[in-house]
Image (cartoon, rainbow, N blue to C red):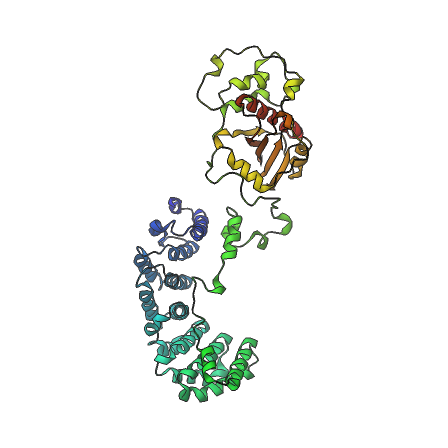
Amino acid sequence: VTLLASGSSELTYVLLKYVDQLIDLCPGIFDDEYRVFYVRYHDQTHIKHSKVRILAKLANPDNAPDIVAELGELVANVDEMMGRIAVQSMASIAMHDSGGQGAVESIARRLVEMLDLHGIPHISSEAATALASLVRRHPSIVSVVSAPLPRALKYISEPAGKASVIFLLGECGESIVEAPYVLEKVIDSYDSIADAAVKTALLGATVKLFFYRPPEVKNMLGKVLKKATEDVSSQDLHDRALFYYRLLRSSPDTNIAKSIVTSKSMTMSTKHFAEEDDSELRAALMHEFNTLCTIYRCKAENFIDEENIVKFVKVPKEHPLPREAPVTPVTDPGVNAITNHMGGVAMADAPQQSVTAVPSTVSAEVDLLGFGDDVSAMSVPTPAPVGPASLQSLSLKSGVILNGEDYQNKWSSVPDAEAVIIPALAMTTGPTSTDGVEEPLKAFNVFTMASGELSTEFKFFLYGQEEDAYGGGFFLIQAVVSKAPFNLSLTIKPSGGDTNPTKRKEKIDQLVELIKSALGEYFP
Protein backbone atom coordinates (compact mmCIF):
# COMPACT_ATOMS: atom_id res chain seq x y z
CA VAL A 1 0.00 0.00 0.00
CA THR A 2 2.87 2.38 0.73
CA LEU A 3 3.99 2.13 -2.91
CA LEU A 4 0.77 3.88 -3.98
CA ALA A 5 2.49 7.15 -3.04
CA SER A 6 5.63 6.31 -5.02
CA GLY A 7 5.01 9.08 -7.56
CA SER A 8 4.95 6.74 -10.56
CA SER A 9 1.49 6.82 -12.13
CA GLU A 10 2.15 3.58 -14.01
CA LEU A 11 3.16 1.69 -10.87
CA THR A 12 0.26 3.17 -8.89
CA TYR A 13 -2.27 2.14 -11.52
CA VAL A 14 -0.99 -1.43 -11.64
CA LEU A 15 -1.05 -1.66 -7.84
CA LEU A 16 -4.61 -0.35 -7.73
CA LYS A 17 -5.70 -3.01 -10.19
CA TYR A 18 -4.21 -5.73 -8.01
CA VAL A 19 -5.68 -4.20 -4.87
CA ASP A 20 -9.10 -4.20 -6.53
CA GLN A 21 -8.77 -7.89 -7.35
CA LEU A 22 -7.46 -8.81 -3.90
CA ILE A 23 -10.38 -7.04 -2.22
CA ASP A 24 -12.77 -9.26 -4.18
CA LEU A 25 -10.81 -12.29 -3.01
CA CYS A 26 -10.37 -11.20 0.64
CA PRO A 27 -12.99 -8.58 1.62
CA GLY A 28 -11.87 -6.32 4.45
CA ILE A 29 -8.15 -6.78 3.89
CA PHE A 30 -7.54 -3.06 3.19
CA ASP A 31 -10.41 -1.50 5.15
CA ASP A 32 -8.12 0.09 7.73
CA GLU A 33 -6.10 1.78 4.98
CA TYR A 34 -9.08 3.47 3.30
CA ARG A 35 -7.61 6.98 3.57
CA VAL A 36 -4.72 5.93 1.32
CA PHE A 37 -7.28 5.65 -1.49
CA TYR A 38 -8.59 9.21 -1.18
CA VAL A 39 -8.21 11.14 -4.41
CA ARG A 40 -5.35 13.64 -4.56
CA TYR A 41 -5.45 16.75 -6.69
CA HIS A 42 -2.32 15.77 -8.64
CA ASP A 43 -3.40 12.17 -9.38
CA GLN A 44 -3.81 11.18 -13.00
CA THR A 45 -7.42 10.80 -14.20
CA HIS A 46 -7.30 7.02 -14.54
CA ILE A 47 -5.84 6.70 -11.02
CA LYS A 48 -8.61 8.89 -9.59
CA HIS A 49 -11.26 6.71 -11.21
CA SER A 50 -9.66 3.53 -9.85
CA LYS A 51 -9.41 4.93 -6.32
CA VAL A 52 -13.07 5.99 -6.25
CA ARG A 53 -14.20 2.52 -7.36
CA ILE A 54 -12.05 0.90 -4.69
CA LEU A 55 -13.34 3.19 -1.92
CA ALA A 56 -16.83 1.70 -2.25
CA LYS A 57 -15.40 -1.78 -1.62
CA LEU A 58 -13.60 -0.65 1.54
CA ALA A 59 -16.71 0.65 3.29
CA ASN A 60 -17.73 -0.88 6.63
CA PRO A 61 -19.88 0.43 9.50
CA ASP A 62 -16.87 2.22 11.02
CA ASN A 63 -15.55 4.08 8.00
CA ALA A 64 -18.65 4.38 5.77
CA PRO A 65 -19.57 7.94 6.95
CA ASP A 66 -16.10 9.20 6.04
CA ILE A 67 -16.08 7.44 2.69
CA VAL A 68 -19.59 8.63 1.72
CA ALA A 69 -18.63 12.20 2.67
CA GLU A 70 -15.51 11.95 0.52
CA LEU A 71 -17.52 10.62 -2.42
CA GLY A 72 -20.06 13.40 -1.97
CA GLU A 73 -17.29 15.96 -2.47
CA LEU A 74 -16.36 14.36 -5.79
CA VAL A 75 -19.88 14.36 -7.27
CA ALA A 76 -19.62 17.91 -8.63
CA ASN A 77 -16.12 17.35 -10.04
CA VAL A 78 -15.39 18.94 -13.40
CA ASP A 79 -14.57 15.48 -14.70
CA GLU A 80 -17.96 14.11 -15.78
CA MET A 81 -16.87 10.48 -15.52
CA MET A 82 -15.51 11.10 -12.02
CA GLY A 83 -18.89 12.42 -10.92
CA ARG A 84 -20.69 9.41 -12.36
CA ILE A 85 -18.32 6.95 -10.68
CA ALA A 86 -18.70 8.75 -7.35
CA VAL A 87 -22.50 8.40 -7.52
CA GLN A 88 -22.19 4.75 -8.52
CA SER A 89 -19.82 4.09 -5.61
CA MET A 90 -22.19 5.67 -3.11
CA ALA A 91 -25.03 3.53 -4.44
CA SER A 92 -22.81 0.44 -4.28
CA ILE A 93 -22.26 0.94 -0.54
CA ALA A 94 -26.02 1.02 0.01
CA MET A 95 -26.66 -1.88 -2.35
CA HIS A 96 -24.29 -4.16 -0.46
CA ASP A 97 -25.39 -3.04 3.01
CA SER A 98 -21.76 -2.41 3.93
CA GLY A 99 -22.33 0.93 5.63
CA GLY A 100 -24.12 -0.35 8.71
CA GLN A 101 -27.45 0.67 10.21
CA GLY A 102 -29.01 3.77 8.68
CA ALA A 103 -26.52 4.01 5.83
CA VAL A 104 -29.02 2.95 3.15
CA GLU A 105 -31.54 5.67 4.00
CA SER A 106 -28.80 8.27 4.41
CA ILE A 107 -27.34 7.51 0.98
CA ALA A 108 -30.83 7.41 -0.57
CA ARG A 109 -31.50 10.93 0.74
CA ARG A 110 -28.21 12.14 -0.76
CA LEU A 111 -29.18 10.66 -4.12
CA VAL A 112 -32.64 12.25 -3.94
CA GLU A 113 -30.99 15.64 -3.42
CA MET A 114 -28.90 15.01 -6.53
CA LEU A 115 -32.08 14.61 -8.62
CA ASP A 116 -32.55 18.38 -8.30
CA LEU A 117 -29.07 19.24 -9.61
CA HIS A 118 -30.50 20.61 -12.85
CA GLY A 119 -27.26 22.33 -13.75
CA ILE A 120 -25.39 19.01 -13.74
CA PRO A 121 -27.60 16.76 -15.91
CA HIS A 122 -25.29 13.75 -15.86
CA ILE A 123 -25.38 13.65 -12.03
CA SER A 124 -29.18 13.82 -11.79
CA SER A 125 -29.41 11.09 -14.43
CA GLU A 126 -26.88 8.89 -12.64
CA ALA A 127 -28.66 9.46 -9.31
CA ALA A 128 -31.98 8.34 -10.84
CA THR A 129 -30.38 5.17 -12.18
CA ALA A 130 -28.84 4.47 -8.77
CA LEU A 131 -32.17 5.02 -7.00
CA ALA A 132 -33.92 2.60 -9.35
CA SER A 133 -31.48 -0.12 -8.36
CA LEU A 134 -31.76 0.80 -4.68
CA VAL A 135 -35.55 0.48 -4.73
CA ARG A 136 -35.20 -3.01 -6.17
CA ARG A 137 -32.74 -3.90 -3.42
CA HIS A 138 -34.48 -2.04 -0.56
CA PRO A 139 -38.22 -1.49 -1.22
CA SER A 140 -38.49 0.15 2.20
CA ILE A 141 -36.97 3.42 0.87
CA VAL A 142 -39.94 4.08 -1.47
CA SER A 143 -41.25 6.79 0.85
CA VAL A 144 -37.88 8.58 0.72
CA VAL A 145 -37.65 8.41 -3.06
CA SER A 146 -41.21 9.11 -4.25
CA ALA A 147 -41.71 12.85 -3.55
CA PRO A 148 -39.30 14.44 -6.08
CA LEU A 149 -39.97 12.03 -8.98
CA PRO A 150 -42.67 14.04 -10.87
CA ARG A 151 -40.44 17.10 -10.72
CA ALA A 152 -37.31 15.20 -11.73
CA LEU A 153 -38.96 13.79 -14.86
CA LYS A 154 -39.29 17.33 -16.28
CA TYR A 155 -35.57 18.07 -16.09
CA ILE A 156 -33.72 14.78 -16.65
CA SER A 157 -32.81 14.54 -20.31
CA GLU A 158 -30.53 11.52 -20.58
CA PRO A 159 -32.39 8.40 -21.75
CA ALA A 160 -31.02 6.16 -18.97
CA GLY A 161 -32.03 8.64 -16.28
CA LYS A 162 -35.46 9.27 -17.80
CA ALA A 163 -36.15 5.53 -18.04
CA SER A 164 -35.15 5.11 -14.38
CA VAL A 165 -37.50 7.87 -13.21
CA ILE A 166 -40.38 6.38 -15.19
CA PHE A 167 -39.63 2.97 -13.67
CA LEU A 168 -39.70 4.55 -10.20
CA LEU A 169 -43.04 6.24 -10.94
CA GLY A 170 -44.47 2.80 -11.65
CA GLU A 171 -42.97 1.34 -8.48
CA CYS A 172 -43.99 4.27 -6.25
CA GLY A 173 -47.14 5.30 -8.15
CA GLU A 174 -49.46 4.08 -5.42
CA SER A 175 -48.20 6.83 -3.11
CA ILE A 176 -47.69 9.59 -5.72
CA VAL A 177 -50.96 11.41 -6.42
CA GLU A 178 -49.87 13.02 -9.70
CA ALA A 179 -48.11 9.95 -11.12
CA PRO A 180 -50.78 9.10 -13.77
CA TYR A 181 -50.87 12.67 -15.06
CA VAL A 182 -47.12 12.89 -15.31
CA LEU A 183 -46.95 9.69 -17.34
CA GLU A 184 -49.85 10.81 -19.54
CA LYS A 185 -47.75 13.69 -20.88
CA VAL A 186 -44.96 11.28 -21.76
CA ILE A 187 -47.40 8.93 -23.51
CA ASP A 188 -48.75 11.82 -25.59
CA SER A 189 -45.20 12.47 -26.82
CA TYR A 190 -44.53 8.76 -27.48
CA ASP A 191 -43.72 9.30 -31.16
CA SER A 192 -40.91 11.70 -30.29
CA ILE A 193 -39.18 9.23 -27.97
CA ALA A 194 -36.17 7.70 -29.72
CA ASP A 195 -34.75 5.45 -26.99
CA ALA A 196 -36.26 1.96 -26.67
CA ALA A 197 -35.38 1.74 -22.96
CA VAL A 198 -37.57 4.80 -22.21
CA LYS A 199 -40.48 3.29 -24.16
CA THR A 200 -40.12 -0.07 -22.38
CA ALA A 201 -40.03 1.63 -18.97
CA LEU A 202 -43.10 3.68 -19.91
CA LEU A 203 -45.03 0.58 -20.93
CA GLY A 204 -44.15 -1.31 -17.72
CA ALA A 205 -44.89 1.66 -15.45
CA THR A 206 -48.27 2.31 -17.08
CA VAL A 207 -49.39 -1.32 -16.79
CA LYS A 208 -48.31 -1.48 -13.15
CA LEU A 209 -49.98 1.86 -12.35
CA PHE A 210 -53.20 0.62 -13.95
CA PHE A 211 -53.67 -1.92 -11.14
CA TYR A 212 -53.11 0.76 -8.50
CA ARG A 213 -55.25 3.49 -10.11
CA PRO A 214 -57.56 1.84 -12.72
CA PRO A 215 -60.00 4.71 -13.38
CA GLU A 216 -57.26 7.25 -14.05
CA VAL A 217 -54.98 5.00 -16.10
CA LYS A 218 -57.46 3.00 -18.21
CA ASN A 219 -57.42 5.28 -21.28
CA MET A 220 -53.67 5.84 -20.97
CA LEU A 221 -53.04 2.10 -20.93
CA GLY A 222 -55.05 1.51 -24.10
CA LYS A 223 -53.15 4.29 -25.87
CA VAL A 224 -49.68 3.04 -24.89
CA LEU A 225 -50.52 -0.60 -25.71
CA LYS A 226 -51.69 0.42 -29.18
CA LYS A 227 -48.57 2.45 -29.88
CA ALA A 228 -46.19 -0.17 -28.47
CA THR A 229 -47.70 -3.11 -30.40
CA GLU A 230 -47.38 -1.10 -33.61
CA ASP A 231 -43.82 -0.04 -32.80
CA VAL A 232 -41.27 -1.98 -34.87
CA SER A 233 -38.19 -0.15 -33.57
CA SER A 234 -37.66 -2.69 -30.78
CA GLN A 235 -38.60 -6.36 -30.84
CA ASP A 236 -38.46 -6.58 -27.05
CA LEU A 237 -40.86 -3.66 -26.66
CA HIS A 238 -43.26 -5.11 -29.23
CA ASP A 239 -43.28 -8.54 -27.54
CA ARG A 240 -43.80 -7.07 -24.07
CA ALA A 241 -46.76 -5.03 -25.27
CA LEU A 242 -48.37 -8.12 -26.83
CA PHE A 243 -47.77 -10.08 -23.63
CA TYR A 244 -49.47 -7.43 -21.48
CA TYR A 245 -52.37 -7.12 -23.94
CA ARG A 246 -53.02 -10.87 -24.03
CA LEU A 247 -52.58 -11.19 -20.27
CA LEU A 248 -55.19 -8.49 -19.59
CA ARG A 249 -57.59 -9.77 -22.21
CA SER A 250 -57.52 -13.48 -21.42
CA SER A 251 -57.03 -13.50 -17.66
CA PRO A 252 -60.20 -14.92 -16.01
CA ASP A 253 -59.41 -13.08 -12.79
CA THR A 254 -57.87 -9.61 -12.70
CA ASN A 255 -56.19 -10.49 -9.42
CA ILE A 256 -54.08 -13.09 -11.23
CA ALA A 257 -52.87 -10.50 -13.73
CA LYS A 258 -52.26 -8.03 -10.92
CA SER A 259 -50.17 -10.52 -8.96
CA ILE A 260 -48.01 -11.10 -12.03
CA VAL A 261 -47.49 -7.46 -12.95
CA THR A 262 -47.10 -5.98 -9.47
CA SER A 263 -45.12 -8.89 -8.06
CA LYS A 264 -41.96 -7.99 -6.15
CA SER A 265 -40.04 -10.82 -7.80
CA MET A 266 -37.67 -8.21 -9.23
CA THR A 267 -36.56 -7.33 -5.73
CA MET A 268 -32.86 -8.05 -5.37
CA SER A 269 -32.31 -10.87 -2.89
CA THR A 270 -28.55 -11.18 -3.26
CA LYS A 271 -25.66 -8.71 -3.27
CA HIS A 272 -25.46 -8.69 -7.05
CA PHE A 273 -27.99 -8.41 -9.85
CA ALA A 274 -27.75 -11.27 -12.32
CA GLU A 275 -26.53 -8.93 -15.06
CA GLU A 276 -23.77 -7.64 -12.79
CA ASP A 277 -22.54 -10.98 -11.44
CA ASP A 278 -18.95 -11.43 -12.65
CA SER A 279 -17.93 -14.21 -10.26
CA GLU A 280 -16.87 -16.48 -13.15
CA LEU A 281 -14.60 -13.80 -14.58
CA ARG A 282 -13.05 -13.08 -11.17
CA ALA A 283 -12.38 -16.78 -10.65
CA ALA A 284 -10.75 -17.01 -14.09
CA LEU A 285 -8.58 -13.95 -13.39
CA MET A 286 -7.27 -15.53 -10.19
CA HIS A 287 -5.92 -18.42 -12.28
CA GLU A 288 -4.00 -15.83 -14.34
CA PHE A 289 -2.94 -13.66 -11.41
CA ASN A 290 0.26 -11.64 -11.80
CA THR A 291 -0.32 -11.21 -15.54
CA LEU A 292 -1.75 -8.50 -17.78
CA CYS A 293 -5.15 -10.14 -17.36
CA THR A 294 -5.53 -8.31 -14.05
CA ILE A 295 -4.72 -4.97 -15.66
CA TYR A 296 -7.09 -5.47 -18.60
CA ARG A 297 -9.66 -7.34 -16.47
CA CYS A 298 -10.23 -9.97 -19.10
CA LYS A 299 -8.88 -13.40 -19.96
CA ALA A 300 -5.69 -13.84 -21.96
CA GLU A 301 -7.63 -15.30 -24.87
CA ASN A 302 -9.33 -11.91 -25.34
CA PHE A 303 -6.13 -10.00 -26.15
CA ILE A 304 -3.48 -12.62 -27.08
CA ASP A 305 -3.48 -14.71 -30.23
CA GLU A 306 -4.19 -18.35 -29.56
CA GLU A 307 -0.78 -19.51 -30.76
CA ASN A 308 0.96 -17.19 -28.27
CA ILE A 309 -1.02 -18.10 -25.16
CA VAL A 310 0.96 -20.02 -22.55
CA LYS A 311 -0.26 -23.60 -22.53
CA PHE A 312 -0.71 -25.30 -19.16
CA VAL A 313 -0.17 -29.04 -19.46
CA LYS A 314 -1.37 -31.56 -16.89
CA VAL A 315 -1.52 -28.97 -14.13
CA PRO A 316 -2.70 -30.68 -10.88
CA LYS A 317 -5.85 -29.51 -9.13
CA GLU A 318 -3.82 -28.64 -6.06
CA HIS A 319 -0.18 -27.71 -5.69
CA PRO A 320 1.67 -30.63 -4.08
CA LEU A 321 3.32 -28.28 -1.60
CA PRO A 322 1.12 -27.74 1.47
CA ARG A 323 -0.32 -24.26 2.02
CA GLU A 324 1.62 -23.84 5.24
CA ALA A 325 4.96 -24.55 3.55
CA PRO A 326 7.40 -21.60 3.67
CA VAL A 327 7.47 -19.48 0.55
CA THR A 328 11.25 -19.25 0.46
CA PRO A 329 12.84 -22.63 1.19
CA VAL A 330 15.94 -22.80 3.36
CA THR A 331 18.78 -24.12 1.25
CA ASP A 332 20.90 -26.98 2.55
CA PRO A 333 24.60 -26.04 2.56
CA GLY A 334 25.61 -29.69 2.80
CA VAL A 335 23.76 -30.69 -0.35
CA ASN A 336 25.06 -27.59 -2.13
CA ALA A 337 28.61 -28.56 -1.25
CA ILE A 338 28.13 -32.08 -2.54
CA THR A 339 26.54 -30.85 -5.73
CA ASN A 340 29.37 -28.41 -6.36
CA HIS A 341 31.95 -31.13 -5.73
CA MET A 342 30.23 -33.54 -8.07
CA GLY A 343 29.81 -30.98 -10.84
CA GLY A 344 28.90 -32.80 -14.01
CA VAL A 345 30.92 -35.96 -13.29
CA ALA A 346 29.02 -39.23 -13.28
CA MET A 347 29.48 -41.35 -10.19
CA ALA A 348 30.90 -44.29 -12.07
CA ASP A 349 33.63 -41.99 -13.45
CA ALA A 350 34.47 -40.39 -10.09
CA PRO A 351 38.11 -40.74 -8.91
CA GLN A 352 38.25 -43.41 -6.22
CA GLN A 353 41.07 -41.81 -4.17
CA SER A 354 39.62 -38.29 -3.93
CA VAL A 355 37.46 -37.61 -0.90
CA THR A 356 35.64 -34.69 -2.51
CA ALA A 357 34.75 -36.73 -5.57
CA VAL A 358 32.95 -39.51 -3.73
CA PRO A 359 29.59 -38.26 -2.43
CA SER A 360 28.53 -41.68 -1.12
CA THR A 361 31.20 -41.47 1.64
CA VAL A 362 31.40 -37.76 2.36
CA SER A 363 27.60 -37.36 2.42
CA ALA A 364 27.41 -39.22 5.73
CA GLU A 365 29.46 -36.48 7.41
CA VAL A 366 28.14 -33.34 5.71
CA ASP A 367 26.26 -30.93 7.98
CA LEU A 368 22.98 -31.59 6.12
CA LEU A 369 20.69 -30.17 8.82
CA GLY A 370 22.75 -27.01 9.26
CA PHE A 371 23.64 -27.55 12.93
CA GLY A 372 26.96 -25.81 12.45
CA ASP A 373 29.27 -28.81 12.94
CA ASP A 374 32.67 -28.26 11.47
CA VAL A 375 32.85 -30.99 8.87
CA SER A 376 36.36 -30.04 7.78
CA ALA A 377 37.66 -30.66 11.33
CA MET A 378 36.40 -34.20 11.41
CA SER A 379 38.70 -37.05 10.63
CA VAL A 380 37.62 -38.35 7.26
CA PRO A 381 38.67 -41.93 6.60
CA THR A 382 40.01 -42.91 3.24
CA PRO A 383 36.96 -43.78 1.13
CA ALA A 384 36.47 -47.26 -0.14
CA PRO A 385 36.50 -47.78 -3.88
CA VAL A 386 33.15 -47.25 -5.50
CA GLY A 387 32.14 -50.53 -7.04
CA PRO A 388 29.03 -51.97 -8.63
CA ALA A 389 27.50 -52.88 -5.25
CA SER A 390 27.51 -49.20 -4.19
CA LEU A 391 25.89 -48.01 -7.42
CA GLN A 392 23.16 -50.62 -7.09
CA SER A 393 21.88 -48.98 -3.88
CA LEU A 394 19.49 -46.92 -6.09
CA SER A 395 17.49 -48.90 -8.60
CA LEU A 396 14.14 -47.53 -9.81
CA LYS A 397 11.13 -49.50 -10.97
CA SER A 398 9.77 -49.15 -14.48
CA GLY A 399 6.12 -48.52 -15.32
CA VAL A 400 5.20 -46.91 -11.98
CA ILE A 401 1.97 -44.85 -12.03
CA LEU A 402 1.08 -42.32 -9.33
CA ASN A 403 -2.04 -40.15 -9.63
CA GLY A 404 -2.40 -36.59 -8.40
CA GLU A 405 -4.25 -37.44 -5.19
CA ASP A 406 -1.74 -40.07 -4.12
CA TYR A 407 1.11 -37.72 -4.97
CA GLN A 408 -0.43 -34.99 -2.85
CA ASN A 409 -0.99 -37.34 0.08
CA LYS A 410 2.55 -38.68 -0.01
CA TRP A 411 4.03 -35.20 -0.35
CA SER A 412 2.01 -33.89 2.59
CA SER A 413 2.94 -36.83 4.78
CA VAL A 414 6.66 -35.98 4.59
CA PRO A 415 7.67 -33.08 6.89
CA ASP A 416 9.25 -30.11 5.13
CA ALA A 417 12.28 -30.52 7.39
CA GLU A 418 13.06 -33.79 5.61
CA ALA A 419 12.99 -32.21 2.16
CA VAL A 420 16.30 -31.80 0.36
CA ILE A 421 16.54 -28.63 -1.71
CA ILE A 422 19.12 -28.21 -4.45
CA PRO A 423 18.89 -24.76 -6.01
CA ALA A 424 20.09 -23.39 -9.32
CA LEU A 425 22.19 -26.12 -10.98
CA ALA A 426 23.70 -24.23 -13.92
CA MET A 427 22.66 -25.39 -17.42
CA THR A 428 24.21 -24.41 -20.74
CA THR A 429 20.94 -24.71 -22.63
CA GLY A 430 17.37 -25.52 -21.76
CA PRO A 431 14.40 -27.48 -23.13
CA THR A 432 12.01 -25.93 -25.63
CA SER A 433 9.03 -27.83 -24.22
CA THR A 434 8.13 -30.04 -21.29
CA ASP A 435 8.74 -33.13 -23.45
CA GLY A 436 12.43 -32.20 -23.56
CA VAL A 437 12.64 -33.09 -19.87
CA GLU A 438 9.92 -35.70 -19.44
CA GLU A 439 11.10 -38.13 -22.13
CA PRO A 440 14.79 -38.34 -21.06
CA LEU A 441 13.80 -38.84 -17.42
CA LYS A 442 11.25 -41.49 -18.34
CA ALA A 443 14.05 -43.54 -19.86
CA PHE A 444 15.65 -43.57 -16.39
CA ASN A 445 12.34 -44.52 -14.70
CA VAL A 446 11.70 -41.04 -13.33
CA PHE A 447 8.11 -40.30 -14.28
CA THR A 448 6.01 -37.13 -14.52
CA MET A 449 2.80 -36.64 -12.54
CA ALA A 450 2.20 -33.10 -13.84
CA SER A 451 4.06 -30.42 -15.73
CA GLY A 452 3.51 -27.00 -17.18
CA GLU A 453 5.19 -24.12 -18.95
CA LEU A 454 5.05 -20.59 -17.56
CA SER A 455 6.46 -17.43 -19.06
CA THR A 456 9.73 -17.64 -17.10
CA GLU A 457 10.07 -21.32 -16.24
CA PHE A 458 9.08 -24.95 -16.73
CA LYS A 459 7.68 -26.74 -13.69
CA PHE A 460 7.56 -30.50 -13.17
CA PHE A 461 6.18 -32.78 -10.46
CA LEU A 462 8.20 -35.99 -10.79
CA TYR A 463 8.44 -39.28 -8.94
CA GLY A 464 10.28 -42.57 -8.93
CA GLN A 465 10.04 -45.77 -6.89
CA GLU A 466 12.86 -48.03 -5.76
CA GLU A 467 12.84 -51.71 -6.51
CA ASP A 468 11.34 -53.71 -3.63
CA ALA A 469 14.69 -55.33 -2.96
CA TYR A 470 16.11 -51.91 -2.12
CA GLY A 471 13.25 -50.70 0.07
CA GLY A 472 10.43 -49.85 -2.39
CA GLY A 473 10.32 -46.20 -1.28
CA PHE A 474 9.16 -43.26 -3.39
CA PHE A 475 11.13 -40.17 -4.31
CA LEU A 476 8.87 -37.15 -4.90
CA ILE A 477 10.56 -34.39 -6.86
CA GLN A 478 9.55 -30.84 -7.65
CA ALA A 479 11.77 -29.59 -10.49
CA VAL A 480 11.87 -26.03 -11.83
CA VAL A 481 13.81 -25.15 -14.98
CA SER A 482 14.30 -21.38 -15.16
CA LYS A 483 14.59 -19.89 -18.64
CA ALA A 484 16.77 -16.82 -18.04
CA PRO A 485 19.36 -17.89 -17.22
CA PHE A 486 18.84 -21.63 -17.64
CA ASN A 487 19.19 -23.52 -14.37
CA LEU A 488 17.59 -26.46 -12.58
CA SER A 489 16.25 -26.36 -9.01
CA LEU A 490 15.14 -29.52 -7.21
CA THR A 491 13.09 -30.19 -4.08
CA ILE A 492 13.16 -33.88 -3.15
CA LYS A 493 11.11 -35.67 -0.50
CA PRO A 494 11.67 -39.39 0.22
CA SER A 495 8.51 -41.31 1.17
CA GLY A 496 8.77 -44.79 2.67
CA GLY A 497 11.58 -47.18 1.97
CA ASP A 498 14.90 -47.09 3.79
CA THR A 499 14.67 -45.11 7.06
CA ASN A 500 18.43 -44.93 7.66
CA PRO A 501 19.30 -41.21 7.23
CA THR A 502 22.73 -41.94 5.83
CA LYS A 503 21.46 -44.38 3.21
CA ARG A 504 18.57 -42.10 2.32
CA LYS A 505 20.94 -39.23 1.73
CA GLU A 506 23.22 -41.42 -0.36
CA LYS A 507 20.28 -42.42 -2.54
CA ILE A 508 19.16 -38.82 -2.96
CA ASP A 509 22.70 -37.88 -4.03
CA GLN A 510 22.62 -40.66 -6.60
CA LEU A 511 19.13 -39.57 -7.73
CA VAL A 512 20.46 -36.08 -8.40
CA GLU A 513 23.28 -37.56 -10.46
CA LEU A 514 20.80 -39.75 -12.32
CA ILE A 515 18.68 -36.71 -13.21
CA LYS A 516 21.75 -34.81 -14.38
CA SER A 517 22.82 -37.78 -16.47
CA ALA A 518 19.39 -38.09 -18.06
CA LEU A 519 19.43 -34.38 -18.90
CA GLY A 520 23.11 -34.40 -19.83
CA GLU A 521 22.55 -32.47 -23.06
CA TYR A 522 21.60 -29.40 -21.04
CA PHE A 523 24.52 -29.47 -18.61
CA PRO A 524 28.14 -28.42 -19.24
